[in-house]
Image (tube, rainbow, N blue to C red; front, side, top):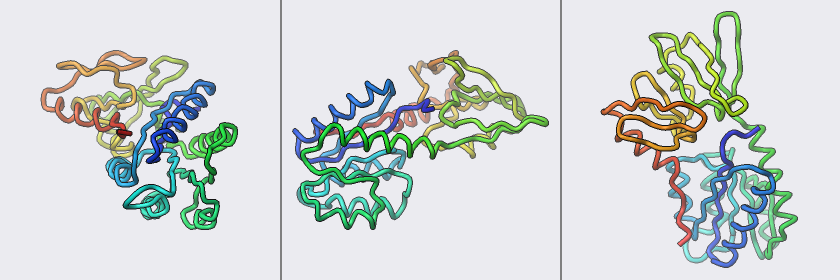
Length: 248
């Protein structure tokens, strides 16, 4: 089960093709009843810049024959040099590229014009692949050990060497007490998704609804305090988390 939006990127230099892909992806997500974070890029260089900052995309719909500069196959090789997790789907008008796709372990090839039915099948496969790679956190409390999805963690509150980990269950925040220091938990979680907003609180940026002067408002939970020395860091982390590509 996905608690967080699926992060999908479209890299296509043709404006009409790009808009069509975005529309089809949004229609698929709406029918699935799931949230997505959809970003669009007009060339490989702009996507590469965004990806190297965070490397947190789940799926890339990538045109092979882009304009001047790096083409889609070159971009895929750059990605595979650092990341095996990202699902890459090539979109091409030239089927002869398909043999090269094995080198970069592409999830699928779609031939232009992209048919909605074929794209939906590929998106379903990508979703299944992402669900299998869900990150988990092992929580040990006394004689009990629990494995919880990282995506379900709302925030963590520290009390000396004991922490309460608040997770989303049936739309409500439920706490788990664990004998771990906040720093230890923070080191086990993705740095791009969590931010220390206070010496006693670690917040999951995906659930931040609003940042005020001295507190942060969360979905499914109460407001958390923000230390004066952490305000700038929190704002920067929040903006970076929600930064999207500009399709131009």
